Length: 478
Image (cartoon, rainbow, N blue to C red; front, side, top):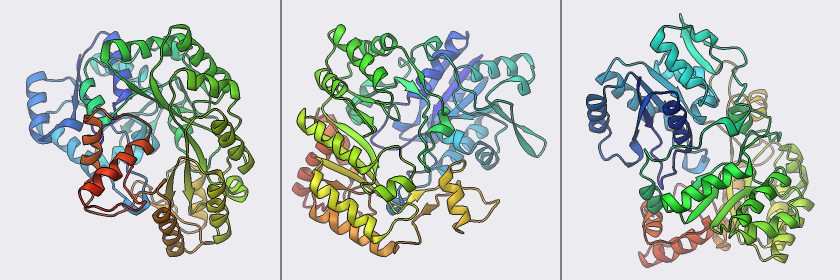
């Protein structure tokens, strides 16, 4: 079959659609012809969809939905209307069956299928389910027998049994097929390549969608497979900066250590950053990540208040965060903390406790979010329902942000903004206009500047100041 895959993510700076690269590889291996229409770089979406469908005449169209929204309360952007327009344009130019998928879709599949009026979707990983669905559509098989498919049956959408059962052996999945993507432009405009060492998340954070999308069981790619891909990215694609896109690179330490040792064994040294948990990153691991070229670590801390860490059901304490920061300082590894203000039980006292601890720890940077986006199938959504933030039966497609009733929302926003104004290393997304943030960051990447987000925003501030735009803490880095 002829399969058209569409990247519907229009966010800038652009992020390489790694999921589509994996999917195109699996579909090609199954014997189908594949092309990717990457709308991230489109200057006229309508014309590009029309031209591609006319020239290629696809038998099936797969549309990837990476995000539902930007999860940023102070600068909220809802993506579903734009994606719905993309779907409508496809319907206008062809009667070809449309299949939706991607991490954003997998969070609320039935609601999105209903909103888009599309008959089929793939929940979770698509490398196995999508080729099976293609064969089914071609030969008239029974979609009810395909694990991972959700489909329209009358007025309802049916999820097949074991729908969240993901691919068990990641090593059996072929390497992502990036040759259908404009890799040079993604590097020039986005500043990095991306790679995944595992899937799944066994943590219990109340707001997180990783377990919904990838399952709770950790599944690993072998270090050899990971480094094979790194070599391809460096030697054949020309990537000079990498982001490890695992939910938490260092859980467990042992697998992360094995990946680093394989990189060292092959003589690979490339600049890169990972997301890490501040829960017990070992000195051995941090020594190795530095040796392989890691120039900054982003710790997903959420808070530096034990009360809030417990309420958010993190597996670590404020003492763990401090210990991780001390270890980074000892080894001279720059690190930042990602924080989340306004969760259940947040008070003036817990906010000030976190800010006071930041002053003591002195991370090189802090990325802070205010308000917790409530997504379906998370404990956060259940708490918000119980506290009357929405009514039973309402879907959560449109952004709903939770700020605990135990803290005044206006005070919280003002306090965090004032802290950001007095700390140049503290970044929060805001609705401040006139900064042309995305264009300026792309300009920085095009000039060959690479690094963790705080280095990019250091340059951003310098250039914004030259443009007579004064930046005081609040920038849209989402």
